[in-house]
Length: 296
Ligand code: HXC
Ligand code: NAP
Image (cartoon, rainbow, N blue to C red; front, top):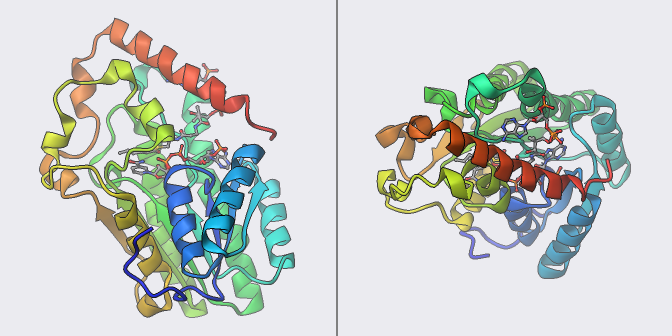
């Protein structure tokens, strides 16, 4: 990947990227490994993690290790983080990237549907941050946490309400712990990406049936989706020692989208009942395919 940093910038860093087996998590993991960091990636699909870990290790020459873990389960998260500590010492950084999401009219959600997202994003991000943070404090280590949010934390997320609520919670965790844990040398920042097309997000947020046919990119002031290296550069910058005084901040990287149009799914108001039925079927198909690959 074409990055703007020198090759050994992250040497001696040890970074956990949740959801690092796919999509943006894989992109950030590759960038960290390329710059010399040891990278741990977790997710529920062991085979996906093994494949990505091998691919990134071969490509970068750094150690990249996959650990199957469901971040909805606090004990499993603590076991994973203990396993990492035992495998060469303290982490230096964590990226809360794992998430679940799908578009749905809020009136159609069940409590289980709400929890399917909130348990991953709201609770899971806390469990991971807490498991690393308490060890950093106990061991007198510095640490850095980056959470991947969305711009909906600022202006709301119609048709993605459980995600918007959960990400907003993680945003306030970022600000709260930046102050509480600053004295320990622990920094927390967040990134709110605009559209960076990935398989996982697009199957659930822009399935065929939700295609608005309105050239959504036209509402992005910069006229295009994000490029993966652009996101990776920001994720590296925030993780590096060069910005040790930067904490409690959430940075949008969206080509100006949320400032121009809200950057959310408000335009889906025009879909009909039958559109929503088709959308739900398509998303469920994607969910089931992924589920068949999970061991945990
Ligand atoms: C309404 C739905 C639904 C849909 C699932 N559910 N899909 N409800 N509309 N389209 C409901 C189910 O009916 C069920 O409730 C409940 O959710 C749990 O479903 P499961 O399939 O059992 O969930 P689970 O196995 O826990 O999977 C979690 C998941 C799944 C979130 C539903 O999509 C997943 O694993 N996602 C991980 C990857 C992902 O989402 N990536 C996208 C991240 S992108 P009932 O009551 O019916 O049983 C992102 C932001 C991008 O976050 C921003 C772009 C600009
Ligand atoms: P993705 O490829 O679907 O990534 C989600 C990852 O989270 C997957 O690797 C998934 O792996 C993992 N995950 C989900 N539930 C988990 C659980 N319970 N435990 C452990 N891991 C779990 O989608 P993406 O687009 O790269 O999204 C990555 C992050 O970017 C998310 O936080 C998303 O909200 C954010 N984001 C993306 C965009 C975009 O345009 N793509 C825009 C804004 C924000 P398993 O299924 O194997 O568990």
